[in-house]
Image (cartoon, rainbow, N blue to C red; front, side, top):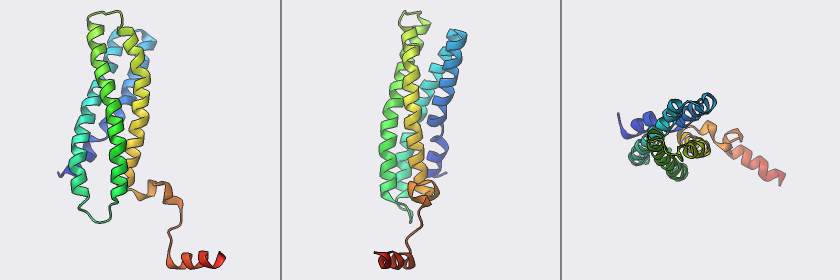
Amino acid sequence: MNAAHWHLALNHLPLILPIAGLLVLGVGFFTKSEVVKRTALFLFVVCALSTLAAMRSGEEAEEFVEELAGFSHDFIHEHEEAAERFALVAYALGALSLVGLWASYKRKGFARAIFIAAFPLAVVALWMGRETGTSGGEIRHTEIRETANQTPATPETQEAEAEHE
């Protein structure tokens, strides 16, 4: 497996784990189960770790992909910027979750506040992860780009447009 393949294999975890964690955390709030809420925090920690792995493999994949013909550096750069923003949120969610796990096990009074704070932060991570995933997909999958529904400019269409002006 080359660097790009590793990145493609790893990059889905940071996108899926916030969804799973949010679902588990919601069940934990509904059932008032400390164990279930701790499981959600554990998933958020794993999300942060998988984000680290995806970021590392992404740097190596960038070097590999830039050597291939037909790839736009602009799309790669946009994806990299989105990934860096997402990573900061994922790392913050992971750190908050570690503190929350510790507080929950030690039965600290502020553990409930951390469970509550983790929920909106995970929603933000999920949204930013979607943005990152979409921008990454646009590197190779031209059909999902915003311009995909536009007719490509050909010499004939350019002539026709020039005649109408």
